[in-house]
Amino acid sequence: MTATSKVASSPSMSVPTVSQKRLVIVGATGMVGGYALRYALDNPAVKSVTAIGRKKLGISHAKLKEVCHRDFADCSALAEALSGQDAAVFCLGAYTGAVPAAELRRITVDYAIEFARVLRDSSPETSFSFLSGSGADSSGRSRIPFARYKGEAENALLAAGFPRVYIFRPAYIHPVEPRKEPNFSYRLLRAVYPAFRVLFPNQVIRADDLARAMVDVALRKTGERGGFVFENRDIRAMVESLHPKQGRS
Image (cartoon, rainbow, N blue to C red; front, side):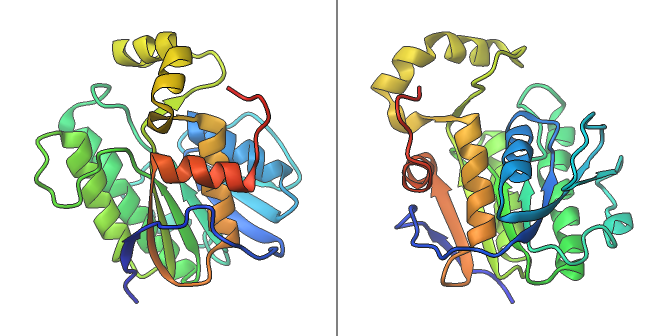
């Protein structure tokens, strides 16, 4: 079936208690994917985690099954590992300017579509959480490559036949833990973050909060089938509903 795209009107979502689920995470060596992995491994609602990536994680856990896969242009070899999964969190990506435009499109669009193809064939009832970005343009008319590519990937995933697709469009993702920033813009945003989050709270989201939301929604699902698009404001409201914070920055 083809999922129907809709913007989330109730991001907090009334959700039932879930039984243990099998979760696959793509991009667990990245910032958001790493937090998603840690949260999933500690989450009693998760029975097992299959982490798929191009590099070793360097950790071991009773719930964790690690699959190294170098070429996401062809995910056919992942069919067995993806069989019987209940939910997927896809965080594989690249920063604008870090790679040439052609490679950025390949990573953002082609890899997501190819992975989704194999996952859909192997586990047709899987729910799918996709890390997109603020400004993603599903019309394909944006002059910004990142926006066009994310929009193209969103459209493909919403039409891939999953019963539920959750599109997350965060604005600035605060790393929480110190890291080497990918470019000057990120260094600047990190420096001004304390003031930025006060003045523009709906333009920021903590990386760990975003990761938890992506995992929780995929695991818990919703009462209806279709496609759901969560903007930064929606994600923050969802986090407040599912994980009330006290004194967190």
